[in-house]
Length: 239
Image 1: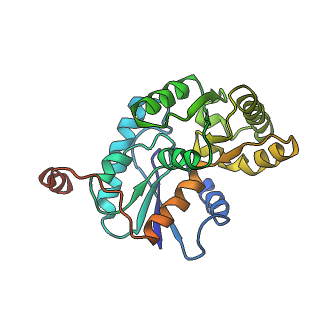
Image 2 (image 1 turned 60 degrees about the vertical axis):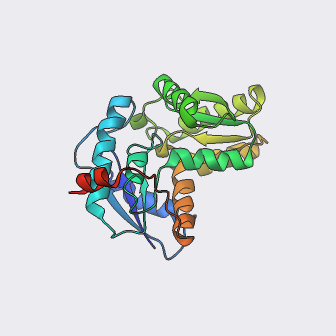
Image 3 (image 1 turned 90 degrees about the horizontal axis):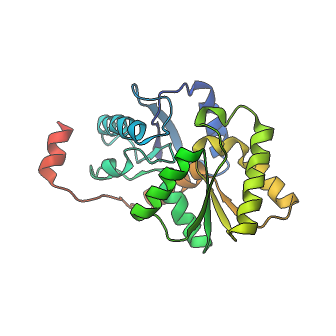
């Protein structure tokens, strides 16, 4: 199957692409072909409503241009920018990491936590939860770093994540934690190992691999997450 890996920000991803493919190989089918696409204009990261809305429009444009040349589309940002709008097009299954991560978490846990980037991330996650997230989200805590800073020091970020996982498990009794930024993928293996060593019993959901695997299953079962709208409106946009 052929999956579009859509990067909804304008930051330089050239060096990260090989790392992402290498990481995903552990989780995806051997016959899955990951093809990267990236929006050409917009913000380098999405950390506010304005950035999410503007970049989300560029995501829709990329999906429109893709036509039927892919089996499914994955949008790589925990904010799910443009995902719901793309679903209205009804062409292909389109998925983002946020909704699929929470779905997985709700299957395996009664009490769910999210580790987000900073205070702005907390406000965003709280709002999304109110608008249609899951009532099982009982804890949202920040790592207190911007998206661009998460990759700077692996060891210190891992220690901070470990501390937050311990606090959420002890104080909030969570048993599943969603990493609230796809940039955290590169430290998830180290984090899981530290949790095992510290005997902290929580499941860590890394949203990027989780979403791509989720999309594979949708494609395999010929499922499309289409949201019905006025076909006249959709046809007009396509033109």
